[in-house]
Amino acid sequence: MQESDLPGLVATVLWAAFALAVAFGAIAQRTHFCTMGAVADIVNIGDWTRMRMWVLAIGVAMIGFNAMVAIGWVEAGNSVYAGPSLLWLSNLVGGLLFGVGMVLASGCGSKTLVRVGGGNLKSLVVLFVLAIAAYATLRGVVAVLRVATLDTAIIALPAGQDLPSLLAFATGGSRRMLALLLGGGLGLALVAWVLSRPEGRGADVLLAGLGVGAVIVGAWWVSGRLGFVAEHPLTLEPSFLGTNSRRMESLSFVAPVAYTMDWLILFSDTSRVLTLGIVSTLGVVLGSALVALASGSFRWEGFAGVEDTTNHLIGATLMGIGGVTAVGCTIGQGLSGVSTLALGSFIALGGILAGGVLGVRYQTWRVERSL
Image (tube, rainbow, N blue to C red):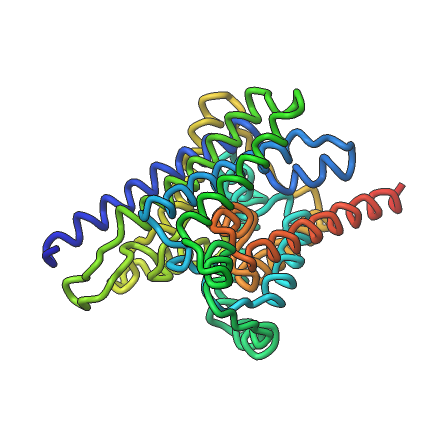
């Protein structure tokens, strides 16, 4: 590849990622796809419908990603999730903080973007606070604390932390074949569980699960296949174009929100360029807005009072800190990361779900106490 070809390829990668994010936002707005809502539905009324949406999306993402691994298109080790250093404590604590925060803030990072597209001004405030907290945890004062404490708890693994790589190291088997067997088998089991009940076969569940899962797979292909250059003309090294991490990326909505804020504030600084994470953040808002306007569901909404404002500000702060610490959110770790079968992603997902349950129970207790 010639240096003159790079701008065109980067533009193609960013436009493709933007289109996928628009689709994500549209689907999430249309189907009310929301991890926090799924947890709240189970805890409060025993309804598993929205959880089946999410589990179906996980199953589809697992099958798609690991099929691409088996073909040789992508490798889990090229992502931020599947390196050999397992930050188990950061994944767990960050996940817990994020889970509690998403309940207090009325939704995770992706749901916040979807709500912004639907006219929710509360979510716009949450978005700004989340971005500031995330940036402080990436590079600021909270980052210093994070690196000096939680990030010191590291387990050095003999191979990448994705299950196929670990099993291939232990057994001498083929990593690609193990990815196909493990990812395909587990993914199909999740899909079968979703479809085993009538509520798992509803139109919204199928649209959300299949659609969101396909978007995650599509983003992996765009970043890991379309945007991969085996020999960058300037560095002569393998390179993934258009990403903040310089690695293969799929959708995630905590650190990218911080990078979006940074890009907007320092727009005139030519060193700040659009990346897959930034265009994905903007695309979700646009996709949500298009569906909200077309369906007549667009509504301006503000805070109910001081207590409501306080809860959302605390929740946004916890999500920003927790999402960066856990290396992802409900989408970043719960879908993109888990699709790689990385151990850290499963730990982070467990922390997020546990934090979500704690947050819902706290909210229930607070309401009952006020009666």
